[in-house]
Amino acid sequence: MPEFHALVPAAGFGARMGNQLPKQYLPLAGKPMIAHALETLCACADLATVFVVLSPDDTQFHCHDWSHLGDKLQPLFCGGATRAESVSNGLAASELEPDEWVLVHDAARPCLTQAHLAKLIAELSGDAVGGILAVPVADTLKRADSRQRIECTEPREGLWQAQTPQMFRAGLLTQALRQCRSVTDEASAVEALGLQPRLVEGDSSNFKVTYPQDLLLAELLLNKNR
Ligand code: CTP
Ligand code: MG
Image (cartoon, rainbow, N blue to C red; front, top):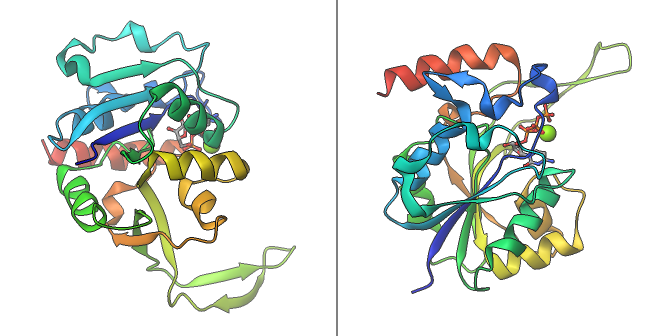
């Protein structure tokens, strides 16, 4: 049976958060934000390794004690200028076999749960392509014109918001990212190969912490689930 591994891109600056400290290291419910996802991934029995891709200039990772996560946690100081580059570099450094599964998860999604992971793995481990956690769009969608007035209302039927983890075989994902560098998620690179990743329905609690106002909601959820 091919093994499952996680790969966590964590080499961004968090420009939209507007803090000097990269957002993955901001304190959140008593620990650096990145610790939440790493602890959840390391506690998942299905995952053999949890690679975390850090900037070569990272000064923060070793300021924290990660010994409770054991050998499963493998830091790789090979992050790139974009998320896709960080994932691509991390995959190369991980030396995974082409048929092994890799679950790419944002460091900035701290509210990931074991239930999310279990559902993703259960629905995709027999899939030929792989897929992603996602949620159907709930709000009415408006298209803006250049004056920020509503041009039209877009039908939301069939639209989903992509989340992470995004789960693909290491060989396919490496090939996809090599051919398509300007993508904001792994699925887009796989789609560019003409394949159709599966959408596995998650929920909105697994949101990405992007702006300062997202920190409070993440903290409330994390404290509630303790
Ligand atoms: N990421 C990365 N390498 C980059 C850019 C982003 O590994 N060059 C990671 C981030 O650290 C984060 C994930 O990709 O865990 C999702 O990216 P995003 O939320 O956009 O984080 P940032 O790029 O850091 O934030 P911003 O876009 O606001 O600058
Ligand atoms: Mg970004």
